[in-house]
Length: 399
Image 1 (cartoon, helix red, strand yellow):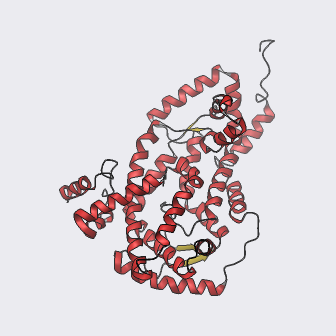
Image 2 (cartoon, rainbow, N blue to C red):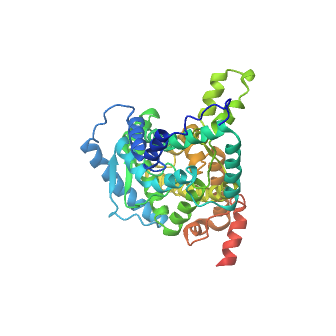
Image 3 (cartoon, rainbow, N blue to C red):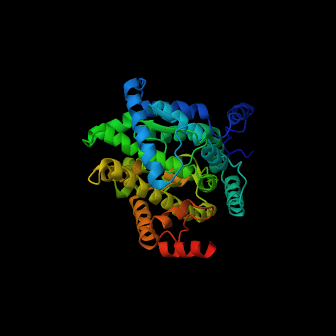
């Protein structure tokens, strides 16, 4: 080593042993994720069990909802599928388990252990050469690899915990779940929303149950569930490691344009920067395909939720509009989901979904809408989601 070259503190046996011990825990520390999720979900306050009388009332409403959903949609909503009336902590635990495959794909990609595409291989090679030529980047790479499992665990836990404070059930976000064997309602969140909007609690519960039952039925269609699972896993697994992301982003801050702390907070709100991840060309290709598929599914679910709840609660019910406002208002809280898993439920995305379903109804009625779930390959493509006539023409040609 040259006399004027500073020693690298990471080139020593003790650090190597510590690094091996940390890496043995895997690319994502699930214990950290669970602890962080529970803390965020309960906000550090002990959570009481759901009141038994409230649970019985919800189960009674669910029986009514099942009947109407089956009659209007034709979807299978068997009574044998259990209804779990749970608190936020239980929802967080169930969600971490159900979404584990998505987060494992993300962790393997960030950790550099995922199978590389040709695009990612070239990008990773260039990044490695840059690290070798810059000792500081090499040091940051070592630090990033060391803390990445904990950072990813905290990020995943924060994501799930924050969602738990507001979600009505499993499908506020249209992400399929395995095992797909239950319907879940977080009744405290449903009741809080009802009280906030001066809606009768039973009416709000009926709306939430209807939404969950229809969503459960949609993702109960095997080819729909498998298609979305594959697309989300491809997106999450498409990140490539970028240990220099944080330092690069900090160096690019324009502190003359305003409050530097505000700019820094904005920077750190991006989970991809914190985790040393960078979007790849493969993700740019899969993102519009995933967006179109999700828009078709969201449009289908919203259409039939409106139909069923109008039948039960009346056309003048304010719940649909209240929930749509909630969905838009919470878009900022779901930034981790959009950036890490590719589910982007912006107001524009929801409007696109509604316009697609309206166009299908105008041309082909409910029979046309039912085609969305009829067989594999029927979900709309990026060009078709804005042209329902084009989608219908393709299905007519292929059938």
